[in-house]
Structures are given as C-alpha cells and as structure tokens.
Image (cartoon, rainbow over all chains, first blue to last red; front, side):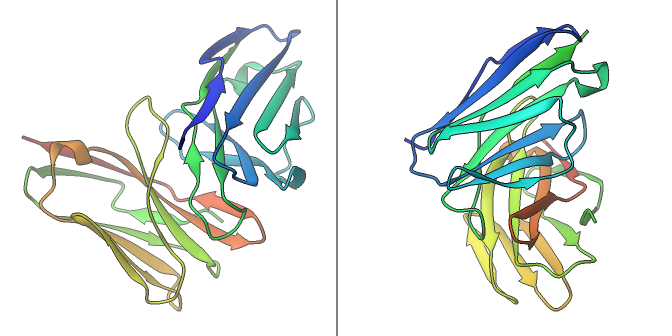
Amino acid sequence: DTEVTQTPKHLVMGMTNKKSLKCEQHMGHRAMYWYKQKAKKPPELMFVYSYEKLSINESVPSRFSPECPNSSLLNLHLHALQPEDSALYLCASSLRAQGREQYFGPGTRLTVT
Amino acid sequence: QQPVQSPQAVILREGEDAVINCSSSKALYSVHWYRQKHGEAPVFLMILLKGGEQKGHEKISASFNEKKQQSSLYLTASQLSYSGTYFCGTETGTYKYIFGTGTRLKVLA
C-alpha cells in the first residue's frame, strides 16, 4: 500500500467554524507533513512530525493546530480561519524526515467564507 | 530562501527534449524532483543525495552539483503525459524542506 489518504476532499467553512482535516498512511513512514498550496504556487511547508513528535512549525498561525495521534494518522485542526487561508492542504509522508522521498495525498480543497 | 527554477514555462512538441534547472542560494542536503498535474497532488520523480550524483528514470534523468547548489532535470523524447508543473524540492537543514518556484511544461501533439 503506497497511498496517503486525506479527508475530506472539499471543505467549506465559515470564519467562526471549527473543523479538522485528516490524513492517513499505512506505509510504515515515520515522518508526516502538512503543506499549504495556493493556485499556481509551490506547496509551502507548515508542519513536520517525526516519530510522532512535532519537529517543525514554520511560523504557522495558531488557528492551525496539528496533531499526530499515532504513526499512521495526522490531523489538522482549524479554528477561526480567514478567507486568505483558502487553499489546497496537502498531507505527505516519508520513511524518515531527511533524505527520503515524500508521498503526497490528494489534498483537501478548503474554502473559507 | 526558495530555490529558483528556470525556465518558468516551456512548450514542447512530442519527441522534443527539455532541461529544467533548480538553483539554490543555500547549501543543499538533497534535491527531490516532483511533477504535479493540474488539480492533482505532486508525484515523486527522483531524489539525488550526493554532490555530482546523476539518476535516471525511463526518459527522465537528473543531476545534482552540490558545490554549485544546482540541480537539473532532463526530459528526453517528451510525451504528452509529461505535461504538468515540475518542482524541485530541497532540504536545507534538519527537516527543513522547501519547494522551488516551479516550471510549467506543456507537451503538444
């Protein structure tokens, strides 16, 4: 199984809502990532988990809260988002956090109204 | 600082060759290459770990010059399926990962 799954595929939320994005992989990878991608731009790294510990937080606003409950699962909790947070949110995993290829999920298309 | 890719965009006819360059102002631990088709997730193509390393994958190959902090992706005898946006990805420190500016490639029949 070389697949990273993400749910939901699409999400529309108001600025006062609380929602969560979910990512799952069963490849035995010990590094997991959240990226944000705006149209026609490269993915931007938000968070890196290595062995279920948060290793990198790229100065992401606190309205985004990551969680790694176990080695296969990664969540991104969203609260009080702004319209400019609308983007494609990609999850990725790799065998370890350095020197290895990343496998991406299909992404969640988020629209904040 | 984000690696800069050149060219920004390129249009090819089937069977033509292309070269995409990735240049960083920071020392690189490794270089990864990905292709992203419209509306889809990036797909891994190859990774280069050592200075001067070259790799090939069917008709797609790449080189990495660690000293110059540059990598190049070579697409030979391009096919329609090669169309998409190509990104280099680089590791510049512990777990720090950054994508290049991207190169849009379109292959015409």
